[in-house]
Image (cartoon, rainbow, N blue to C red):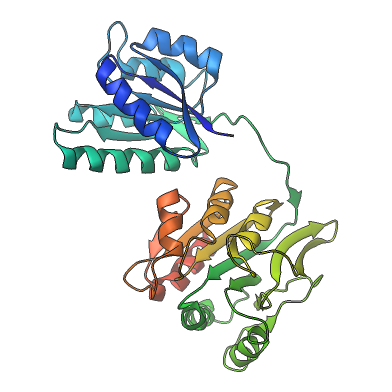
Length: 344
């Protein structure tokens, strides 16, 4: 289902520019395009948009006043887009999710504006609340997917090209950073063929203080243990009345791979934990990007390996461009960030 976007700007020309950008982006559609705040208020009540793109200077009521009246009644992410750069602080204080200056009249500025707006649209939809003049409002959602509760915490890791070297480094640093304390269970899905994952897990198990093993269907993950998805099988997170367990089974390729990182991440997004931390390591393609976005939308903390330390900046880049990455980190800093999030 496409996310509905309401545009409010007194310039017909610029409304048309915004409409083209929004409608060209997969997953978004313009539900209404109006020239003033009063018409916008009517359309909000009628269309129930998922996102609003708002100008500041409009006839009748300006954008700041509109935010003050809108958010207490219908909390929705609002991206303020205006030529008045000085209004940024007022707009953000009034509850805007983001502030983007309108582009100058040259192609380079327009392309930068388009990229910035698309990224802001994706990021705004992940927000769970906005603050208007010191009052926090929970954002409206058209649908809520029921999730089975598992309790506890879990760390999820995915990767492809280069990740068979990156994962051992990450686990070694996690082992050192934990300083003898227990870690949540760790489930990792890498693009590896059958026959190699068991040997890979055994080698890691012999060199780390963490227990590392190839995942088995139906087993319940334990703390300070790492579970590697078997080659040519998908590993998913599931839950029943007793809590979390691993589902491991053969299946068709998902996002071009088996095991698939998307399969792991998307399954975990359907289970409610006290805390989920998901990491997307170096790898080619885009597997894991959509799943990471679903995790972030469900409340997980998400990390992507940065370009500088990635052997192939494909999967983490796709996730970042989708708005799924909360924080990009160099490989050597990911363990520290995980530990910080666990304490927070």
